[in-house]
Length: 274
Image 1 (cartoon, one colour):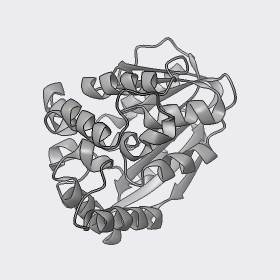
Image 2: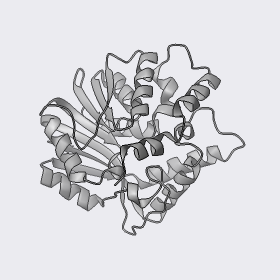
Image 3: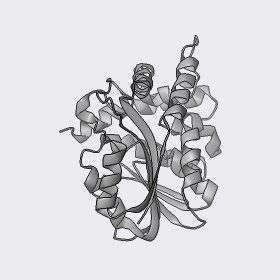
């Protein structure tokens, strides 16, 4: 079983605070008010970055002033984007304390603290009352969740009736046997992939309905190729997910792209209703 200190170590890759401060300083972003767009290169910590967040947002029925939960919010980049885009309020939880600390700092820098609140939490045991939220989402989190049914049950519990739950993930492909290390796991002990069929069956068992799924393999292959080609140049861009992911991010991204091409993994998005 992976403990919390191992999780923190995996996601932060050393002194994440210093790396971010250095990159922000070099980009001229320290010690001044920012727009959320200024942080897109660094706070959308998932494959395809802001493009993936925008795509998921187009599929989510979020309305003004609704209260939405982000399960596994990372640095809060998607939460800030959705809060601004839909004029709603986002509560984000993440198991990695450093991500929450940095994310709330980013909220202050972008004047989003009134709309976005980030706190330490575990998606398998959400610290909220039943039927609290008007909708929920999760981006590239479920691959690390062994007890997927408990994760879905908790999401179902905290959502109001007639609301939605949306998420994106890398599922298990028909060929299986992913190549490690990957962006979400250095070894198989941290990775828990489910096929799309198994995922849909679990959602139905929990009580979700009107489950809509879209495969996103080609988009992710294209996104990885763009990111890897950029990194192949003489120097990395000042801001990018390499600042968060550390020195091995390039190889982990290459492996992920290869897994998709060889049908070992299968990226997809799901939107369903409670």
